Image 1 (cartoon, rainbow, N blue to C red):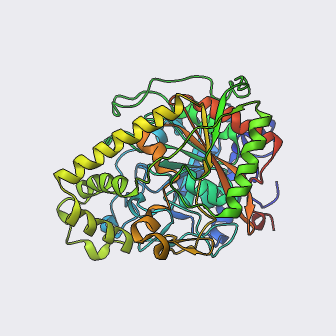
Image 2: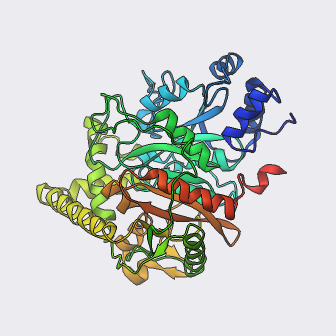
Length: 470
């Protein structure tokens, strides 16, 4: 092979290994060389020697045999840094593999590098005091999103063919949308999060950022299924990859609500996504239905619920560690300390109950909801989080809380309710990727995958950013 890393999907890399076109060691070295010269700052740790040893003995008959894979910084890998992307835990080392990482090893993956994340997964860009700023391969001045920003940058930037992600409020779909990748947030519990699982606030799922639908399907073949260390994980489902293109979608109902009734979405992006949704509805022979979607903006309730877990993680280090935190987490912890109470916790639970009821009522009338994945294209790489959409100053128009919560208004609802949702690369605005989100019924991820396969086939997307090819 030439000195470029593999720029196809992970499944095609396994095929190349099996055909003898290149070896896992050659593929790994090409990725390591590319990482060394990269400007993306997508990695917080490289495990070069162990990766080389794994590549040298890789069994390419396995599903991911020999494929170099990145693991998000918020997920445990034994003997790797366990920092939560925070100065507070600098120097801490993981004592175990996560269940997902252990299953990837069993599937033959070469666990190569730790990808950067936002601190504690708290915001939708990847810029921390511990590791600096991660850049979007489509435009180095823009963010790849967060919190799985390093994984998105690594895969879209051509450095690794596949990387793990987690999605507690959009952290797979948001970066996938900003970088032109495919991303699936599964039904809550589909892939176990153990060991030492923190279940509340019952929003977080794990998975991957990928270049193709089949890569994600193979990932779920390898990783899904109950584990007793995550008591809310779901029973195993077989046939994710082999079942692709086997589901009859004709006649399924679809509603198009680009803003989900509450988000402010950039008008040109909204027009593009509306057109793609209509096109995909026709190609899949779906039936478009008119259903009112008015999901409330739950950013504040979601944030307060998540901060309970963060307070537990920080323990008695807080407030002494306040100055070590990024400004966004400082603000969030200060807000929660001053505003969180038994009453606000109860109000957040009642809000979540209401959202569940509203989502269930919508899915009594439809099978898919088409929406945007992000309100706008990627914003500045180092942040702060966007408070504008196009030329509109959201703070001036709607106030600070509405402006900040608009960042996750499109993705958080599916986390609160546990519904599966995907990001499909949908084209470009100002030469930056935008994504179409499709939310589905609980436990019906495979229908979403087949819908995405139609889009992938009929409107193919670039697998990597063009700067990678130069």
